[in-house]
Structure formats: structure tokens, C-alpha cells
Image (tube, rainbow, N blue to C red; front, side, top):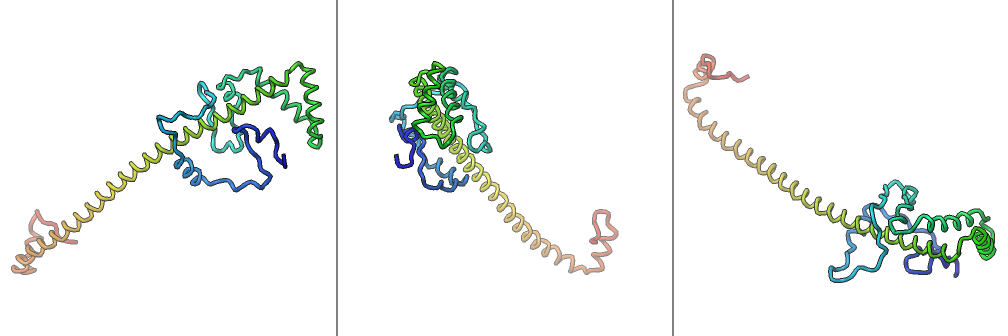
Length: 220
């Protein structure tokens, strides 16, 4: 199929790998913008069908990179895929990995099918298990997207609330500065009024009273 693997293009939830070079990974800000703009379907519109995942699902740290930190067996169990079904696919995957990369695809298929038949593993059961796991992974991705959108919505609301609080604090600070300026102006005007009286009696008289009075503090 012109450079594409049929197994990666059949069915809508398979990963499509193009022959073109991969695009640069999006930045954190770009991803936040992307998930923030995505909208959930309206309440009266049914969500697209998806495998139901039951129980607690494994979380992935951002540093996990390509997914090495994901407990996919737990994801498959959440999708009701038994350990035996998982083991069948693991058997086929292990056999494929033992074959040299340059082995023709048809030869690989013959070798793997013959080996699986020898182990008594039905081919159709492997295909079914693999399709189930793909469906489970698709549901796991969608579950993560819903959690991401919910987290971003909560974060955006929290940021808005904090921005309102910051604006309120700034207004209080600005009001206090304006109040202090008004206080200083009014007090200086009052000081000038009182000073005019003291200056009337003379500087020496004021100095003498200040030194003698226990109520007054002589300026430094």
C-alpha cells in the first residue's frame, strides 16, 4: 500500500504512519490551546461509541515520553481483555521480533503462523485480541483527553479567579497609595497652619519650650 502498513491504516482507530518526516513536537502552550479549544458533544448528542474502561486507570507522568511508563496490561484489564488474550498477542509479537528485519513479509507470516499453530494458538484469536487492545488504547486516549479538558477548564477558571483576586489586591494597594498621598497633603497643610502660629512666637521661644517639655521630642 505505497509504503504504508495495512495493519496501521485499516479501521478508524489505527495509527497512520506516513512516509514523510515527523512534524516537530508541539509545545506545552500549543497543546494547552488545542485541548482548551476542543469541545465535548452537546448533552443531547450521544457520544461516539467507545470501549468502556472499568476501574482505576494508570496515570502517565509527562517524563514518560513514548509511553514506557504506562502499565498497558492494566489498561487492557480495564477493558475486560483477559491475561490469556493478552498472552496470545504477546506470543505473536515475540515471534515477529525474533525474525530478521530483512525477512520478506510473506515469509514472516508463514513462519509465525506455523509456529503459532505448533503452540496451539488460533490465528483468529490473536487478531481478535489485537483488535480489542487497539480499541482499549483508543478508549484510554479518549479518557485522557476528557481528563485533560476537565483539568484545563478547572485551571482556566482558577486562573480567572486568581486574576480577579490580583486585580482586587492591586486596587486596594492603589487606593492605599492614593489615600497616603491625600493624608500627606492634608497633614502638611495642617502643619503649615500650626507652623504659622509657632513662627509668630519666634524660633528661640519654640526651641526653649521643646527642650523643657517632657511631652515634646526635640528633632534630630
